[in-house]
Image (cartoon, rainbow, N blue to C red; front, side, top):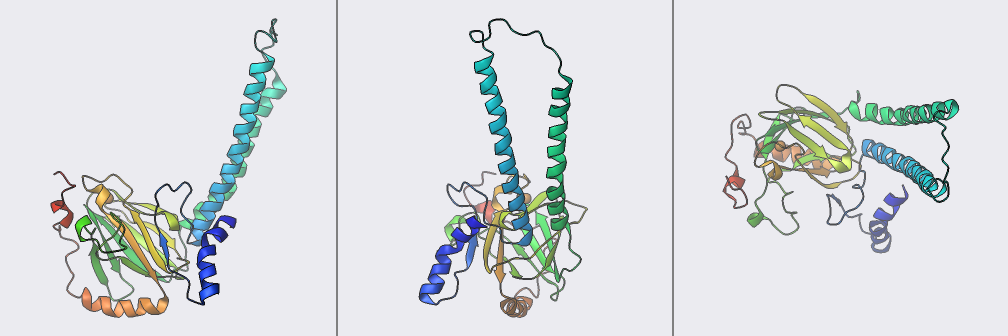
Length: 284
Ligand SMILES: [Cu+2]
């Protein structure tokens, strides 16, 4: 929570001083980033809290074990302990060092399973998105919004415009309404891909012949970037995912435009010439 407060502080100050609307968030991995990306959905916040709790627990365990090791090194080395004891068993100690780790695992399992079930599925979703992985681009469909369907391909480096992050920008981003419970139905046309978005704590395999499900509710309007996270072939590194989260009103407007723009788009089941194949960073 504190980390989040400080992360949003600059935007908050701008808001207070200038009276302007909060800047839109841009979520992606940054150079020299050391920690996870800011959580931007309820699921992501739960995953982050769990991660933080486990880090604290692990740190305590590591320090405890290290202290024991140091104590043994000093107290029982040849100089300090020339005549070693011949003790081999200690029932109480053995019971304790078996039972305590089991207890720790049981305690950890409770919040872990809670977070897992929370992220898995939600009966109250408001809309569905079909995500399909292809070698090497993504196809998105909006079955609840007049069957909008389109492909989303990477923008080659020499065609990037100002502000478009390299290797993360696509021609048609996945436009989604913020503050809406959205179910993703994820599958693949060819090999296993992985639909991932760290700031929303999403990472789900896109598997041919089966539909995987995950849901999210994006907390803030902005741009969310990630990439396919399953090694899926030579252009695996060139199939980014760009979610553009907009307000509900803007989403309704976008749906009207998109229906026209993608009206004759029936191509997503057919193989597609990939623009990137012509780019120089692909060798074959
Ligand atoms: Cu892939």
